[in-house]
Length: 398
Ligand SMILES: [Zn+2]
Image 1 (tube, rainbow, N blue to C red):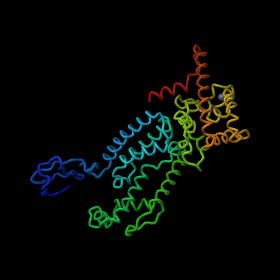
Image 2 (cartoon, rainbow, N blue to C red):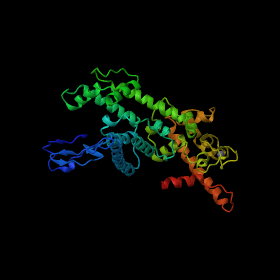
Image 3 (cartoon, rainbow, N blue to C red):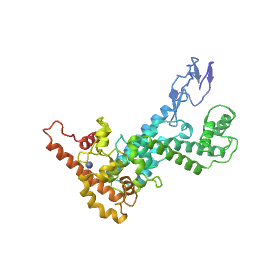
């Protein structure tokens, strides 16, 4: 309610329920008193109705913040279920996430969903990191590509168009349709224009005046493709994902998460692919060591310890490679491939289980070797630190 002149409302139901009466005002704040049933209404910044906070300046921030907090609590329950079961497959996890968390974070998003809101995206990133078993330093582009989930903003856009489809089929006497028709008659930015923008953004034909339904399947397909393209471009711009963009196969989606790996193996492969496995290349970032000096401490090759060196070249770990060679060669002979080609092949769906076991052995071996070096060089001030162990301890604390 707003008013520049004093006026009175007759509201038989308001009566004594004073707490349910609020006067919302516009900027600048209106000083004219508003009465309802002879009672002066107090001014309020927000008014909660059916779980939505109607803000005095029509801001959705409080609604989004409140919904995101509730959705986070709901995600906490999924975490408890996950931990009690030790692990779960992607289908179960997605069912839980899309049934218990997103309906809360997108509540009413058919109305407020157009603008960019960071909280739902932050929550989705957190959920994705939890399932993959990676830390918070993992680039969002990599986790988004691995999980292949729709961007929350695009999901809200679909809800908006779905609601528009409902409106065109609704009884014209109903209030939402009357508001929709009123807004159509106005030639300024509003919900109707937002829906038009969404359809144009996806290069889909749309006429505000027509009453035919929009094709939601087509819209979802287009938005999902845009979502994938966006993250792929972003992945190319992240130095941490230099290896990821070379070894990730874009032809297939959810290769890592769909494979029924144990939580530990999934986490190892995800860390390895996303460039956050605590090897020298990654740990050097936290200690500001120049990239050229992030050399492998296991072998005498004096090479930078990249993912490629660690998995395919490090001579200190060659005995583990030999151990798994026959098993890998049963699927495909990797002998004549380059390091990157080998890695790409090993991350494919038919080899990823073997690769995860091999990676686990190599990483355990690396930790043991690094630990031995540290004990031996304990009296030496220039002794290498334990980057892997140190980082993991920090991670556990987080
Ligand atoms: Zn090495």
